Length: 90
Image (cartoon, rainbow, N blue to C red):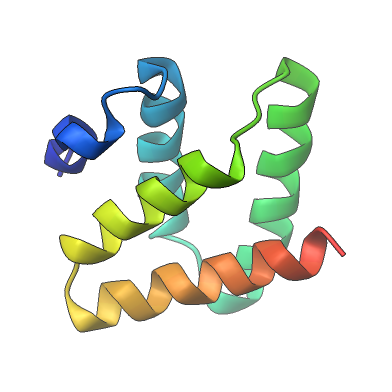
């Protein structure tokens, strides 16, 4: 499950950021669709308090790697989470 973190495309990203994303993915996979938005908002607030930020380039690389290693259903969930996060950032 953690193999995506070892993709060479992600070699320049801080390992602590990748570990946080792995924990987020694990916790988020157990959430219902109704619980996902409050969960993501709490994660975003917590990350902001800790000073953890991803550049747009980092996010793009991470999403590409995760989608490449996902089933079509998992890739759809990733897109759904990204859309929710985009809505939060408006």
